[in-house]
Image 1 (cartoon, rainbow, N blue to C red):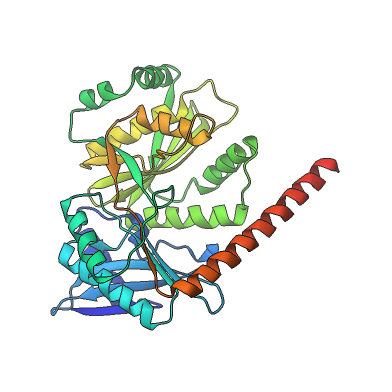
Image 2: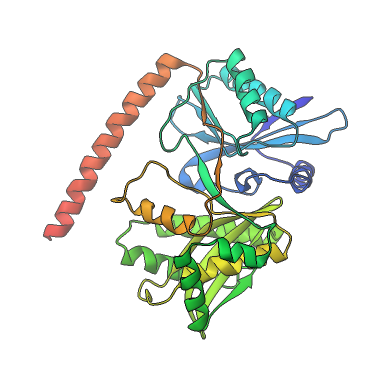
Length: 359
């Protein structure tokens, strides 16, 4: 097996990786080579390994943070792989690679559901390396999946009573959803999304939002790896949602609804239409992507959980995030500096907000 970590991929490597991803039953979209994050102030490296026939057997996007001489590396929901033995050897290689390259920290959130094979992989890795795990949000990923192998009737009847009622009400109010796989509605999507954020008094960076969504739209448009649903009341756009395809699974990414039209069951109808579309096109599950088990009723995430759970009670769990402190003492110093920096930033932010209110 040959292993590579590169700053850029040439055309042949890029095509080989896309062919490899297309051969997989499941992988997370974060491992698509065009999934970009450079706007967020980080760099990306590309890892892949090949067999004796030069066929790609494992692939990962690696996020490298900019912290001056202190280098950290992250893999989020990856690597993409087919063979667990290859995955185990990949984790071992990457640990050794980043150690030799002078990184102080390396972390992996595997992008696969928990099974006896993931448990064995963790056991093997822990025999060779000192791995840390943290039982708290951000290090434990759980989700909810709608099983699309059932009949459409069975799927609908499995929804909560309240969700079924809201979906029926949406159809009675003449809500419809148009499905696009191109960029034609991008400006309308952004405008509605920003209007929703402003209505909720949520902070946002317009340039960052445009960059993030443009990247998603480009992947959908170029590779047909998902769709954008536009929800209308007659001819008026009142909601949108994004679904991404990950092998034989579909994944709910984002949605927005007109904040002034709470009388309409916009997202209920939109997700029901998405479920029907994904089933008709042969996908086995729709992953609602993310369920936080640590929140209480005072947190808005509690109500997002409740909304998702109305569609399914089929929980899925990913392996715990693996943390490798390659230079433990230096990493502790980094965490201390980061803590003080964040504390100062929060103080300045509160002062600016206070000044704005008093003006």
